[in-house]
Image (tube, rainbow, N blue to C red; front, side, top):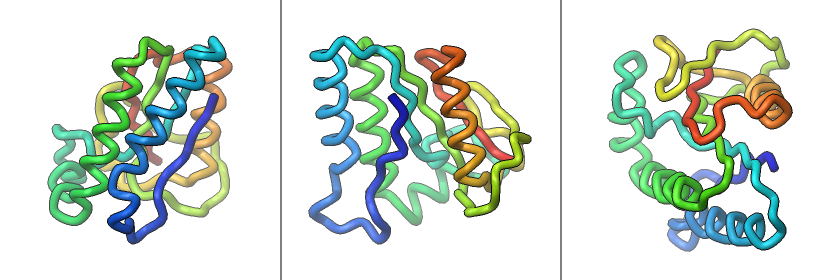
Length: 142
């Protein structure tokens, strides 16, 4: 299962917990149907140790509701017992797939400012096929 589910920007007050609610519904359905593998796109703003760019600081200042909701979403998956992978890209672009991107488990790659949506999708498909980074958080960038 691959998911790039997310709210529209700007996030309305009605959607304040949309990611957390999505995670609860999806994990319940997956457990009920015995589907184990899920790769979920989250946000780089949750990398607290990223200095360049200062992802967590920027996220807390500019998008506090998204940071809180994405964190709650990740927690639902982490507690689910499923074989999850969280993919945390920085700014997403509409550039074409290159297949050339940096991957770093547990951290955003240094100077990781952007990545194309197509390259995020490329990584997510490979992660599903190869069962890489199971129960890990992965940072991606060009």
